[in-house]
Image (tube, rainbow, N blue to C red; front, side, top):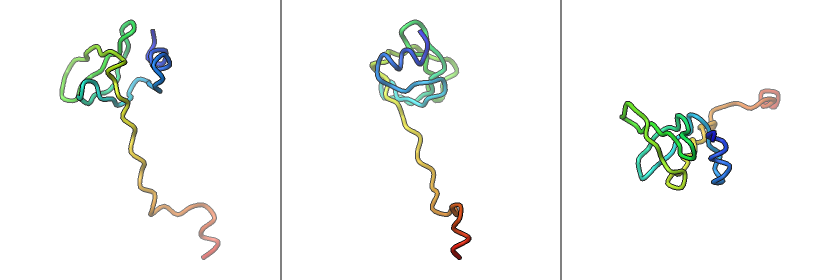
Length: 77
């Protein structure tokens, strides 16, 4: 199975590079091994197999855009 097939089966939008928590440990999805995900945990050299039911997807934080000037706003100045 691919990472995306595993994610679809479990209702998660997973892909290589997705940040996750597995059994309370943060890591990055690096592959799939049959129906299991391969996760490289922070601070470790090799990846480990994780059951997708134990994986919690970490969403990237929304960047701060408070100081970004939107298009067309200069015309109103």
